[in-house]
Length: 327
Image 1 (cartoon, rainbow, N blue to C red):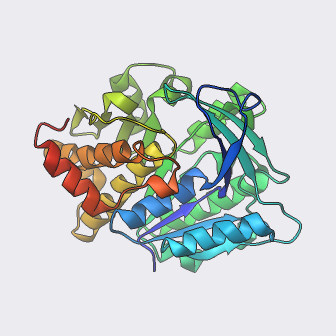
Image 2 (cartoon, rainbow, N blue to C red):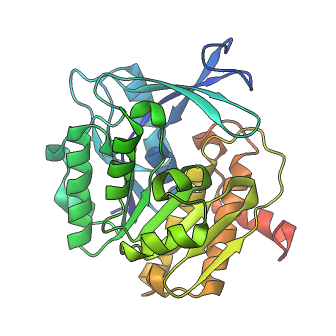
Image 3 (cartoon, rainbow, N blue to C red):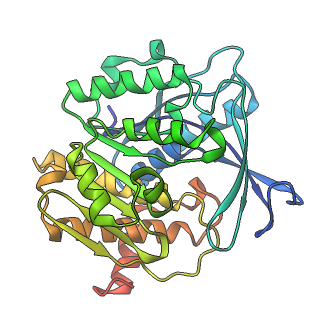
């Protein structure tokens, strides 16, 4: 059974063939597999752990393509539903040089067209960790499915990981989005939030204040990914910041998911040795975050999300080449 089960959206990304334009201005698009939880699942596998995916795609050529990609990457697809009458979701993406993007989504049942009855309790509970984002909490059916999986994971004593991955255009209004996203932290073991989302979700730019709030909600390990600035982390007993690695980026798509996949692979390995996230030392966490920074950095040096995700041996070689200083 998988070490980590990732739940949520699996879709086709149509990526603009040129940079620094809007979706409407792009002269063309290239097809690529996408969806943050799916990217994380592949990143977990390439980081040396096993992964499964729970989600849904249509019985159409795009769904066939996506199911095939996950299977080829070694991700268990026992939890992937293929319901009749649902179209595989599409996302059109135009990326700017600063890493920000313009997104346009096409779907008929939400980007994560899940239903609670498709969640197999035995399959979820067989894993060591469950990872999900906020996109599967937008539509009522998908939210019910996500919350069912979270309850199963909590009852089984699993590690529960949450990455909000806020996309404003997918929500009817910002206040509702903030409330739903914040609900997702309940019962979460590890919360990874990007710097771009931090103030919107937590009402402050200050890492210490925001981390304190999340720790107060019961989160054991809080991580803020900060792109080219690195990442900050906090538990009840330790906190710190780890600088990023200097690389020449080609594309930023999937870097945050690569970062998360590396974190999860390391945490499940530590869990097998009896170590919980909240009990890790500052030295342990620094090493874990440094490896995740390297994984994210390497992802930016190649185009695409899943095709760019590095293997753990490549990450280790990259880190060894950069030396202990980290940059």
